[in-house]
Image (tube, rainbow, N blue to C red; front, top):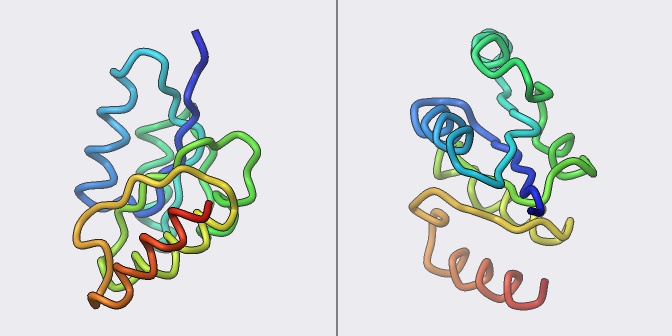
Length: 115
């Protein structure tokens, strides 16, 4: 069985739920976790010790150990991170809302279609 390696960007309530859920999904591996808040990142790293812990989302995008990125940051950050993840060749699971505006949502769909 091929293993799908996940990175999670944003470790608030929903990011933690995503991480816990992924650990119970056969064929999935939580590879990298990311949060800008150092305190929150240290807490999550203790809870998910098998995952690499990084402080900036570009570290997740550049990781060769990540196939899919789950973006669970504040919705105002979704657009920038999702576009960068798609352009980096990652599959993206994006928490709602997709972006701050309808135009950003349409652009995300265009970028996803081209990736």
